[in-house]
Length: 629
Image (cartoon, rainbow, N blue to C red; front, side, top):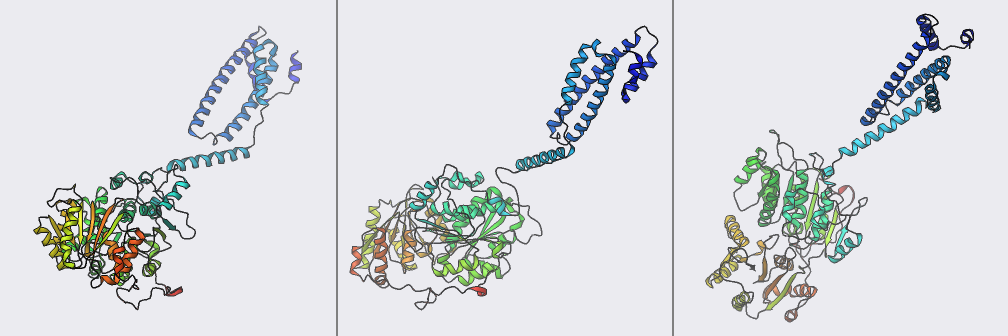
């Protein structure tokens, strides 16, 4: 091919530049030009090889950092430039006569095959970039969500809503069998998902320090299993169950979980750190609940204050005023008390409930029976509004008065009923009755019963089962205590004529087993959780059938069995209660033939305040007349 023919071919910019430099370097016709061209080809190969290695490293780095999509468009434009550069080089190779360079033929075919790959436009690259960015953000968001929520947040529901994670091994058949076995009814409001009971403690995602409270128990009690899920989700709850069913932990665990989820540093100017309030009908129940919650909260720096009558106010006021000083590393966040003393301290300005957003009404039916309804309403008015407050209400029964209270102060509560919502005796307590023609023979019969129960006279420590004897009047309790003491028994008394310190000392000795026998009036009949009470003896029948059921509820607690022996004479008020007493025995499957000598009529229940003229069938007023605090 002649030089003139080569000059007639169309030349690219690079080819012209190459030709110009070749003309400059051509010294003559001694073949130096071919050597220069070969050297240029070798250097071009080395540069391309280095370029490919560099691009390969860059691509790996981009893939590792997740920025491959961001550089996609730039790489494609770079690829276009590279292809164009290769085309120009191919043109030069053609001019050089590739027949003299066989390796260039293979290289050219490889480049041609690469050039056949279509290059996408910038639009698909942008879409790919956006898609990969979305996936990356989603992955980052997923990795930011912890599997166990322990964050400190001001919204308790955000933490608590995941605190129950029912095991996947729990089937619907097991849940149905559990509900049927314990005669449980769960009423959920509209737009609320069904609640799955917690059948094992391991299903609760709570701190290990709270798990300690389950020591000694194999599984949750029915009321705990069914109230924990809604309570831990921040919903209002009504729990209806027999006495001794574990209601303290039913509301105590959600209360502590709520507090732990938002533990914040105490501000010096903060008026009150209290956000949990538990209202109980009796001093003994308030003290017992306070002790339980104090033990649960101590590992987390949470303290509880018990406020009740019968003792000076000053120590309680000091504890409330020093609540946010963190004495002993603890901050008071819980108040447990009786309605009368709480209201007194509120009116004196010593008890600030403005921060209370978790309210518990324990033994609500009992408080209403004792005429505390007005006090309760005033106390609740001092807490946060209903839409900012979680309200828990527990009761042994579900009468109309309790329903009205719930509808006034709760927002769409989940109602859990274990057994019947009427007052029923503990099914684990064996009941028997002894009828006397002469009440003076009850002392000898009491001693015989104690012997039959193999009760030892002297104290034997904490292992001995305890026996609780109920008397109707304070003087009667003192007399029976003295009689037993003369017979050599280690016995204590618990009644209203004793000072609060003396009552607490007696109760502590009975709990610890120092004294295994205690004579008490009905002041101790409700709410007390005394371990290992093997039997209850009703020396005198109480004034109401409700008090009888609460008395015998002191035994057979925590899934254990118990025994109840009742002395019945038919004197005074007892004769009118024979029919109701027989009904309770009959429903439990126990013998009541000895009572048939008395009238079996059942007297209409009278209200403790309004008497026989009280009507509980009047419906609640509707519409704007409903008061919501």
